[in-house]
Image 1 (spheres, rainbow, N blue to C red):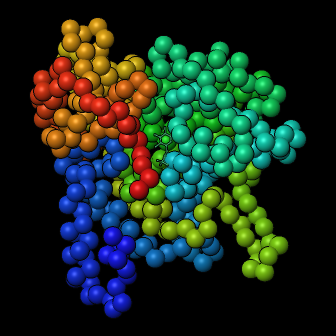
Image 2: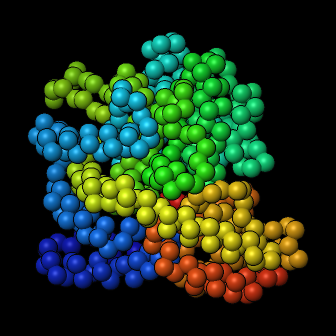
Image 3: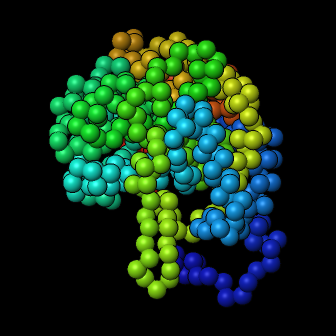
Length: 421
Ligand SMILES: *Cc1c(COP(=O)(O)O)cnc(C)c1O
């Protein structure tokens, strides 16, 4: 009731306020126990410690003006440079930190629109994406007034480049590939997509929000990784989220461009108001220093060796999930993803196909949190370090959930990537 929501007239003491906040959290997802497959990515106790100490130091700092806080300018430059190194950026590579994958994508889409305005005279250039590309591209198209064309994926859930080619015209300013895409966790054919973009002078963006802090280390571990980063000619920009498998607390991602000139197109410079020069690298104005400093601290703390170790553990855990799911009659894994994303679907070839949404409910009763996604109906697991210790129990519970729901369906067909309260 709205009456209950009036702000208190008199302030309350610190202990009471914090006690109430603690009480509010009882129903929240139990990520600390490794029971969420997504949303929170737990790098372990020492990663928490270093992130928390950095966060407290930078809780109040504002990166709006790095002249006032030169340390935040340095932090941004260093994190961007380290990430460019991991992604084999050339010496000319340049980028910025943003608040997350969505904002990195919004910056890359804006850069594509502005570049083609400047160089090709196209006012509202068009975007071509596979249907597996993240919703943030559609959100960007919506915000910037850019037509967006969606093409089907092929048999292996990867972007079908022939279908994309059919959607590319002389008005196309951006062609997108994902490394990997979110729903089934497979890497699109990036070299072909980059070549396609080049045929019309469009930008090619690689969405590595999920893979940016996994694929480089998977390659170091000797796992097969198809070409996807700046080593592919014709890739203009890449987004990589540190707040996912980079294990930084939320609010930080990197958007990288092959050159400073390409990056220039995402920057807004303005001085025709009464407040003075306004230079803005991304979509934010006032900009918290906290996530930037925490990301810097986590990357310093882990180092390449730390990430390789975490990635090895995560990929082995994801392999066990894939093997466990495939061994259950009525279930299958969608796509032949090799990395940390697993889509669990009903197997039509099984003796008794299952309703995976009913299975999701049965798992929720057992305190496991998996996203419902589709089409097709599937349960989505982003496997990360926090899940490793409890994965045996997860597979035991998955079998129990399957036994419970076999023959049952649920009427609730909603999907749950995110919500608006
Ligand atoms: C998470 C994700 C995004 C969006 O990132 P946010 O940090 O949630 O804004 C974009 N693309 C892919 C592939 C993702 O996994």
